Image (cartoon, rainbow, N blue to C red; front, side, top):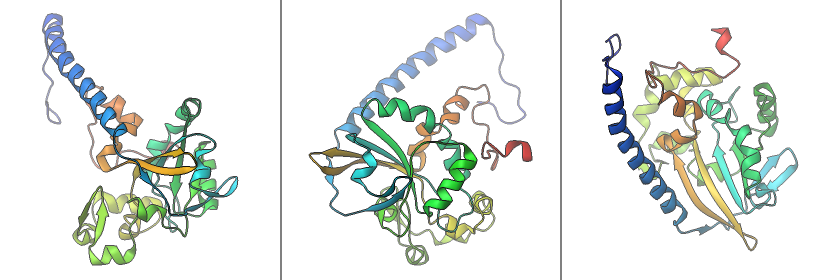
Length: 258
């Protein structure tokens, strides 16, 4: 691995091929391991969801079961867009740029993909129009859905330091006190302050509908979302990799405005 400004190693085609074949074996093992992890996800026990969650959607008020849209499987992306935001999280927006191409294929494989955020529906609709997206997006405004599935924390939890995210409880008071980090930059980008921004959390959750009963089957957060971020899959295969410094990414309609 080369550092910034350092020239990358050069070689002959034979040297490249030998190194590539060695890497290929590691990639094949990675693929086999990924297949095994996918199987283990599917083997997780399903947990019945008895709580009555309500959502505002383009089609009106809906239950969690309604979000399935007649299918038996539901994938929800927990999109960071809080009630006080003026725009959606730029990272979530970059991930969501890849949703529309997948929605139709998933729908024809008995899977509904939707996003859920705490912002009121009108804000989501306006931002969705700006971004040119068409995937389903529901508002959980005023409800407990985000909190119950680790996609949001209350101000009281944040102030007390009792925050559960990514299946662990931690004290984040030092984190939210940092006013100069990349998180604060992103918060300013959505029109709010850093503690308010970080009360929303990214993640995805999967559900199954069987005999009229909804079950929670899987959730992932933080780096577990890397596989859903399409541009990173390409960058990981680019000559310089992710090559990141600070907040380099933008919403897709903002690159020409820098």
